[in-house]
Image (cartoon, rainbow, N blue to C red; front, side, top):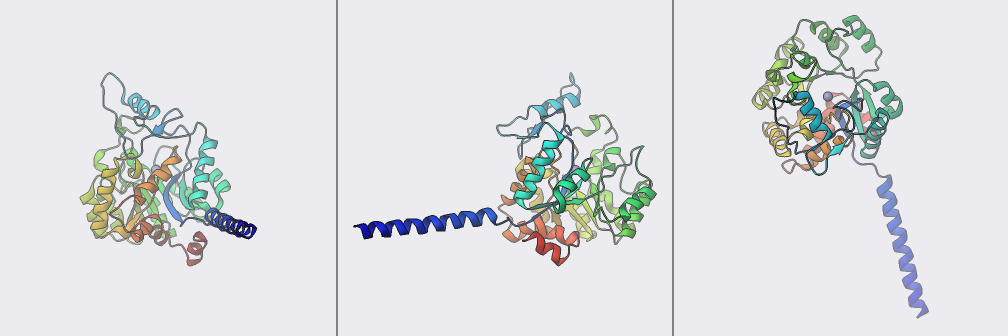
Length: 342
Ligand SMILES: [Zn+2]
């Protein structure tokens, strides 16, 4: 009897040891790496007075009521997101950074990052943050000489997010031309916003010149012709101009896209329809993951989920979107890729 008990006890100890080993392995094993081509070091009030929230995959866009200014309608929508489980943004810039970096660490993400707090994010996030040069052509825009000097330091790996669409300026606007020369010369890739801003963008102060027709990937055509060796990616993938996008991907093999905000701010069905068409057309190896999380750290995981739950993608196609395509586009070395997979 005592022998039986001892055997049971030993069995029990062995299974506890086995279980704790398994748990330990689970805790220490890092998930497969992800590259986020569209991360922001943003302010907590980026979408209205914090806290604001968003409903991933089911936006319920607000209706226009001419008795109210659209900006008020938008802010009201962001402060009272119309769904059961919205992703809420934190109240302070500090919490925003901490929560963003916590997700990068836990999910093994490396983020091409731009925005006002880039240096703080880089200092705290180290290798997880790949610095990118946020750029617009407003009155106080840095001159081409200043940009050349800053890019020559090697700190910035990407030039983006370029937001001139919000100013109503196309990529081939003469004012932008000297910057493109510098990018091609220094071999720094361009990440440019071509696609969705917030709904009702021209009603926002400062975005009066935003135009729906500028969602079209055809906007990049003259630049792609003039700078054939420049690596270009269209941030937000030119949604919803699908035919224009397919034509551009077909004609200009140096052009890639990131999914950006369409991964969580559109109805999930529409996002999947759009990506599926790009994959079906043969360009799944030029779609890159990007979250455009702004002030919502939780949006990063909502965006990853939108890729992971796409049942029309194979495991390998998901890995291409989440990592491999960006690693190729950024020309990461074998050593860098091996480090990411450790
Ligand atoms: Zn963005």
